Image (cartoon, rainbow over all chains, first blue to last red; front, side, top):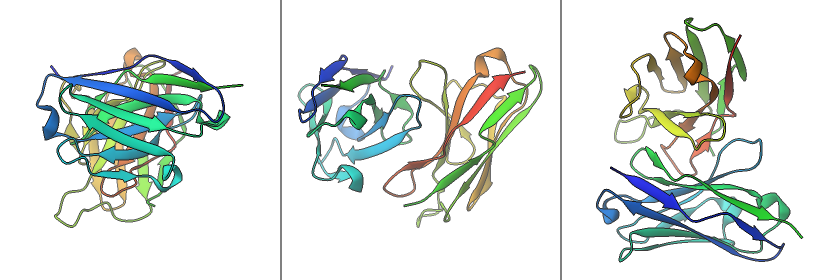
Length: 115
Length: 112
């Protein structure tokens, strides 16, 4: 069965970077891309961007352009999302979701940005 | 960006009764090759979102048939035929027709 397992919670200081991983299993990794999304405490869902696991092509939301990098490692079937220059309002649960119809989601990774 | 607007934002429902959530997009969600990429997600408290419906009316794997979706163009509806206790949570409509993907504000379904 399809599973997306994300890395554990992180606590970062303002200005630092965080890299969240999303390990996929149960299907051919390069057949589907990934979206990354986030949800601030008590808030709705926000799409951050997309990456093709086949080509590595990306499309980032304008809000995150220049601060986010999405990559994949086909040898380990893992997708990554790195966010730099963290601010307190980046505190959120970050999710990966498999493209097609975003039918499969990771469990979420809480990133807390605090001095 | 496409703006997604949901109504109502809160929906108290009696167990066993139907519930309905509406979603309107600021422009047509019909893709150039004919499909309309409007989805509905359910998020139970403390859980990641779960896909219920994709492309307006297709139930995702394992979704009970009491959930149904309808609509076209810019107006869409999620219906629950008979609400059960496990349906409590927040429901989001989402468009994946074009980047950036966007979401409705969420509708909180609660039991009266």
